[in-house]
Every structure is written in structure tokens, then in C-alpha cells.
Image (tube, rainbow, N blue to C red; front, side, top):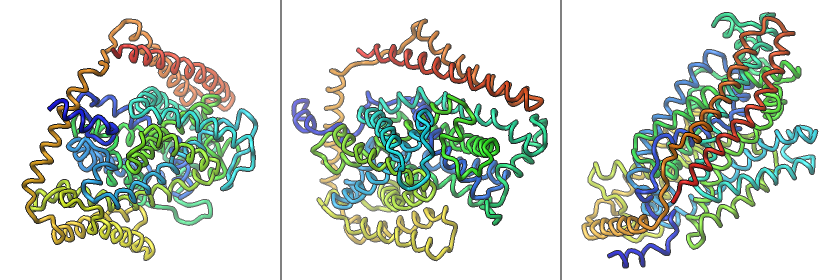
Length: 570
């Protein structure tokens, strides 16, 4: 059995097989991964977008909380169970459900989507580096400065390099960056709130909650757009917070990440990205954007992330925009590489990621991609939601109503007409409702998902899903058992990572935490110990100086600790 299993599977790329038991990760791993990806450069763009869309303070505070909780529930009860039960990425699993033709078409769509998102994040990171070379903000759809293009290429090389080395490298990078990113977002908001307070209430001190709401209503989330029109309301804020990542939760793309989870309940760790990331970071980014606008006497929409971060965080602002862009770009380029590898099965994921990465860097040279993030994320989500519904129906609904899971696979179908028709029909419904303006743009994914699920289930039942596949099911179980045996034998020859419990590593981890505590303390001092503008400017300058020093210290200690941990792989 051992030799036969080796002959059957050794030639396949690891990404095409279920994740082996020895490759699974605990909850802390996913907490860092989600926090690192979702406390990211997009938060600067989206936080400022809520300001320009005219949301009110209370709608932001309550709407973002509700919407992000709904997103966490979607990961926990939709994406994670399927990922853990199959141990496959959606790109591979879809082939068993919809056939090769639709899978290739879908993977092409995903490769393009995640390439563009990664490109947007590289552009955002480059917007910080431009400060160092006195390059003007690039707000047009094309770049007007050759030096900016060179910066984009340099930043892109780092992103591609990290993504090429796979899930573990992406996760390690995120685990280091996540605590620092969260600290800096909150610290930046603290550092600029006194400036906003002075512009509204004539004092740099905020003494109660009502004063914060007043400052929010008058200088940040005013409830009206820049043109004086009524802004978006509570339902729109909830809808956007929920829909912002439909591509990864309802659309099931994050099966690629959660297939490594030991338990399906680990979907709840997405809360580190949604609540500590989206919720707090979007609010903080709005405050920083409005604060930078006050200091520069410019509207938020005329500022790029580099402007906002620099005036909130000083030199650390350069670092946060670069790192925040990298963490999101890395994860999305990894997904794009997986999608491309699922199309070109004879090539390794590293090779496909490199090729996709080259296209990503080229697209990143056009700054329009980050300025259109809001509609891009929503439309991308709408594009993949019908496929998520098809997979959910086949995985969960079919066994409960007497239909056979993988029926198209058992029939050796190259093209599943029910799947393709349901996908096209779902897109027609979604984009049709958008054109007719029947429901809010942010909720289009809900009727699209249910319509596709019902239509696909009906069509599949008429196309062969009700037939008996006793022999095929038996062969599939044997195949999965052969894969398990092959992976167990392979695991015996692989390196083992031991837990680092040395005192020196604990000292390094403690020092990295102390660096974050100092940054937080200086930001709190700037906000709460600045009774007038003169003292505020002194405190802010102190914060900018030592926050940068502590940033260098944090990454030095955290990376040193990580290298020691990796050295224990034997």
C-alpha cells in the first residue's frame, strides 16, 4: 500500500491534495494571520471612504460592529466547516463539484481579482516611500513620476518574494506585523484626536464621551458628504462591513487558509481581523484622515495613505503604510498563485505565484487601483458569491435531501451545466438588482446567494445528482484513505518543529511587547496630557520620535525570536 500510494501521489503538487494532519495549525496561528491581513493598508482607504460617504458617528460605531460580527459568523459557519472537512482549497475542491471547464474559468477570475487587490496594496505601500524622495502624491489613474514607478517595483519584489514561499511564510510575516499594526493604528488616532478636538471645541482635551461624539459629528463622520448631501445610514454601514470580505467568507475563498485549521471553530479567529482590524482600524483611520486634513487644511479625499500616516505617526507612518500594504498583498498574492496553480496543474505554486507577481507589479504602477477599492471589493465579492452558494449546496444541502455529493465528478463531467448556468444566472440576478436599484448595493450578495443555491440544487437533481453512485463513493473513500497513508508515511521523513521555551527567546518576546507598551503609553500621553496646543505639539513630537525607535526595536526583537523558533525545526 505504501509504495502504491507513493506512486499515485508523489508526482502531484502538495496544493492539490488535502492538507496532511502534521501540517495543521492552532488558533494563535490564525489570529495572527487574520489580524495581519485585515489590519492593513486598505484600512486607510476605507476609513477615509466612510468619511467622504457622509456616515454619522453613531452609525459608524454601531454599524461597523454589527457588520463585522456578521462577517465573523460567516467565516465560522460557512467557510471554516467546509475547509476543515475537505482540507482543500476552493480552487481544487470546485473541480470535484463543477468540472474542469467551470473551475478553470472561475480560477482565472480569482487570479485576476487577487492580482488587482495585491497590486492596490503595493501601490499603497509605495505611497509611503514616496515621502522619502519628495515625490508628489499620485492621485491620477496613471503615475506621473518615474521614481514612483521604481519604488513600486522595489516594494513589489518584496511582496512577491514572501508570497512565493507559501502559507507558512505569509503567516509568519503576518504574526510579527499584526500586534504592531494594531498598536500603531490606535496610537495614530490618539495622537491626532487633540488636534481635532481643538478645531471643534477649542480645547485639546476630551473630557467625556459626549465631547467625543460632538467631535466625531462635526469633524469626522458628519452625516453628510462633502457636497452637503445626506450620507449613508446605519444599514449601509452594516452592509458594507459584512460585504467587504464576501469574496473570502461567503465566497469561500478562505478555504485556502482555513483548511490548515485543527478545528472548524477556528473560523471565529477571523474576529481578530474583523473586530481588532476592520472595526477599530476603520474608526482609527477615519480619525487619522480627518486629523491630517485639519493639519493640512485639505479634505480627506485629497490625501493618500502616506499623507495620513505621516502626519499621524511621523516616521513610523512610513513603516506602517509599507508593512500594512505588504501583509494584505502577501495573502492575496498567495491566493492568486493558488488560483493560477489550479489552472496550470503541471506547474508548481511557486512558479505560478512568480508569474502572477510580475503582472501584479505592472498593475501596481497604475495608482487608480487603490482609489477604487470600495466598489472593487463589493463587485469582486458579488462575482464569486454564486460559486460559494453552489459549493455550500453540494457540501451541506445535498446529503440532507438525498442528493449525491460529487455527482458530476463521479460522471467524469468536464463541464457541469447546472453549475455554469446557476453561476451565470446568479450573476444576472445580482447585477440586475444593482441596475434596477431595488436593494442597497451592499446587500446584493444575499439574494444572489440564495437564488443560486436554490437553482443549482434543482438543476443538479434533474441532471444526475439523484442517481446511485455506490461503487464510485466506495472508490472515493479508498482514494482518500490512500492519500492519508501516503501523507502519514511522508510525514515520518519530514522535519519536526519543537517549541521554543528558552529563557532568551522569552526575553526577546518580552522586549518586543515592551516596545508596543511604550508606543501606546506615549500616544495616551499625547491625547490625555496635552492641556493646550503648545504642550500637545511637544508631546506629539516626543511620540513621533520614540514610536519610531520602538518600532525598530519591536521588529528586531520579534524577528530575532522568530528566527530562533525556526532554528528548532529538525
